[in-house]
Length: 165
Image (cartoon, rainbow, N blue to C red; front, side):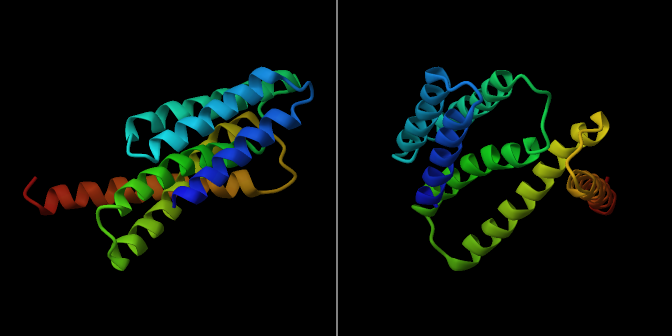
């Protein structure tokens, strides 16, 4: 998982920094800083994970600013990717302590659902702002996230009521 987190972080860091409409050393430096923090976090320092995610998010905001454009339709993929980097690093650190296959399978399923719902939540502002994506992806993602959150809230309320609430 650590290798996948590193690859994803490096792809985000260099991809954004090198594809800006006006290349900027600050963008590349921010991305490289995030990558270095991910590497150090993988040595057993999980407190660095949110800082690395913040740097990746800041790099994305800088990329948008250099492009001079509004929020673009790929924002939901970027949000899911930044979330995924942190979760993969955490998973990698946790895997050092326990390595049972059912635990990893459940964690992988949970991560997939988390990223799906996270991307859907990121799609909500895009749909509300009327950002054109050339398709229905943001609408479908936002609808799926809304359905998942509503279902989750209903299950929690039911458990609370049945459990003695």
